[in-house]
Length: 201
Ligand code: SF4
Image (cartoon, rainbow, N blue to C red; front, top):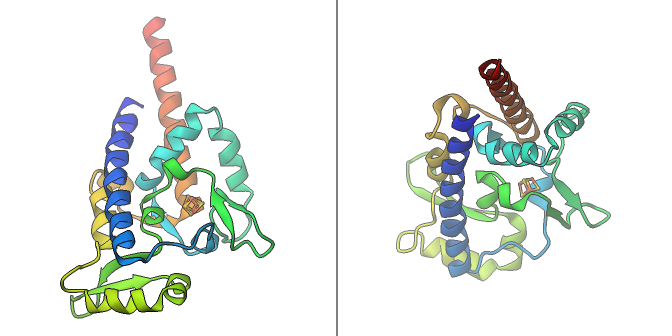
């Protein structure tokens, strides 16, 4: 259990850097998310590794909510948006993250970030809502791709996932990744508990 906690602290340290890097770029370019928009969180295609969900799984464990959350996740019947997204509008497009401090890597890059295209050149990915809100700033950011390159999403994800190959080598839908992370935490917790009891006996 101690090893998972140490690993989680290292993941969180990288998360701090990722959030700072992406939000600085987005602010400089004027490509921030629309206030209260939660469209990314609604998408059933968001993925994360088990490692990326470790801080959240440990947080839920420390709050005594690990088993309950695992049960609730097990009852989800079809691919859907993130379990922790709270809808605040009828169509669900307005809402909020209820686990903001522990959100995984991908959520710290929502909105605008860089990627390598098929030719290996840096390209810019911007969500359609932001593009629609700020067409001139989007065009300006494209013009400035060389002088002001965006942070690369894949590179930041790798920065996290290279901290532990076993937990960080495979991507799952976000709710499944959390399920697997909770199972890891609960397994390690019960193992530590048994070891402690054996030492006392
Ligand atoms: S963890 Fe939070 S920010 Fe990330 S998809 Fe879920 S609700 Fe959205």
